[in-house]
Each structure stands twice: as structure tokens, then as C-alpha cells.
Length: 148
Image 1 (tube, rainbow, N blue to C red):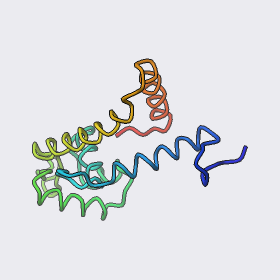
Image 2: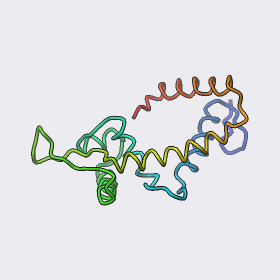
Image 3: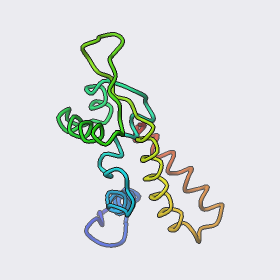
Image 4: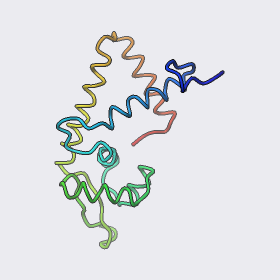
């Protein structure tokens, strides 16, 4: 079966998923008025919220990013008060990065703005369709192993 990624209609389920991710990704990476945190840094805050405090190297590994990229984000987020660095109880020379209250509040606001975009897109869907979408997307997320 031929892929339609260059066309507008998805021929396969894989095409439809890629098209969805590209479209949603563009919208989620876009700045929204009132964003307290850069969308590219929201993933770091989200990882800390889900997994808890950790060392920079562990955070980079969890996000599957280069440590230098994560270090830059941590530096900027620290300057804005969105993360705290505390001494590692196991090694006083190392630092643990944790989500601050301000970071949690900013992340929540960012998620609420983006969730509103999805809510508007699903406005005309009935409850059954919405539940089926939730179930199928949860299944796909688990299959992809994409857990924060």
C-alpha cells in the first residue's frame, strides 16, 4: 500500500497518525499569548512533574535529549524560578533538579491553554466518539512506550 504523506488524505493509519502529530505539534509548539514558559521547555517541566526530581543527566536520559540541550533549558528555567536545584542527598557535590511551585503553575496554565484548543476541535464530537478516541490514543501511547 502506498503512503500518502505528501498528499492531504491519509491512506493508512500510520499516515493519519503522522499527519495528526505534525498538525498538533505545530499548534502546541506555537507561542500562545500569556504563555509563561516556552513550549519547548514545557516538556522538561512535564517530565519533572511526572517523574519527580532528578539529576540533569537522568533528566536528559528521560527526555532522550542531549545533556547540553537540557542544561540550557534548566539554566533558563532556573533563572525564571520554574525549577529549583537542591543538593543531592546521596552526593553533596551533585544537584537535583525539581519543579518549583511557579513552574508547576506555569505548566498547568500552558496545558490548560493547549487543552482548550483540543476541546474546541472536539466540540461537535459526541460522547461515544470522544471515548473511543481516548481509548485508541491511550492504546497507541502505550504501544509507543511514550510515558513521561
